[in-house]
Every structure is written in structure tokens, then in C-alpha cells.
Image 1 (cartoon, rainbow, N blue to C red):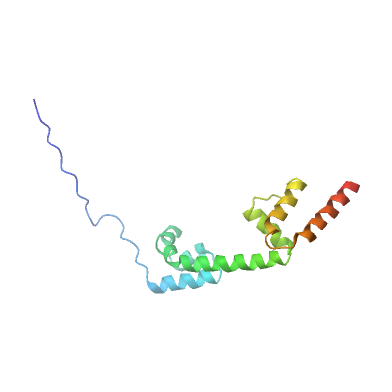
Image 2 (image 1 turned 30 degrees about the vertical axis):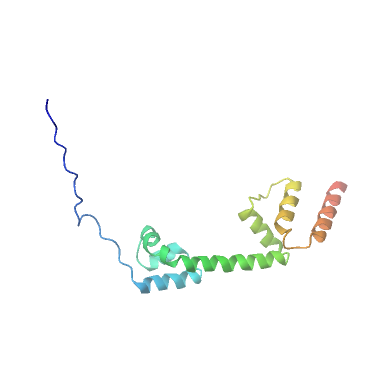
Length: 140
């Protein structure tokens, strides 16, 4: 009976491959300011002289709070416009957050609008508007 000797696990050899990118704090600060100014992240990566994958790995995790604050501010402005019954803002919100499409059946459109606006608006005005629209379509 022969016994096989087990090979020892290979130890990783250090020093092979490309070294990690070193990112300075000034690069991170510049990227955060650019995000807050509305510069697209791919453009920021080019400005820093790195690929977008490198940017996502090294810079993006560091500037997540800046990205979140910009998103929060934009959503706040959008909700303010929706509360003011700004039609294009309502349309945008319904399409991007509620799965609304331009070619939906009329009853689904009314339900979607009322469902989104119910917590923030007086529905009597909207219900009256919906009834008037239905009456106009019925006459045609």
C-alpha cells in the first residue's frame, strides 16, 4: 500500500501584479466638490486621470456622503415642485419612481397620480379635475 504525500499549500507570492492606486486626500476632496457641483462621475474620473473602474473602487466609497446629499437635495426640490402641482415634475416622478408609462390606460393614470399625490395634496381638487376629464372624454 502506498501513501501519497500531500503537497503543501502554495503561499501567495507578493509583488506580482499591479500595485493598488494611491489616492490623495486632495483628489477625494476635489471629487466630492465636483459631485456636489453636478459633474458626472465618469467626467470626474477623467479629470483625476484614472479609469472609471479605478474611480469606483477608490474614490466613490469615500465620497458617498456627498453623493447622498446631492440626491437628497434634488429629491427635496422635486417634491416641492410636486406639491406645487407642477405637471412636468409629477410626470417625471411617476415615470422614474412609479413605473408609469406614457401609453397607460386612463384609469391607471388617474390611480397613479392620486396614489402619489394623496399624502401631500388636497384630493378634492384632483378628483374634480379627474371627473371633468372623464366627462369630456365621454362627450367625444
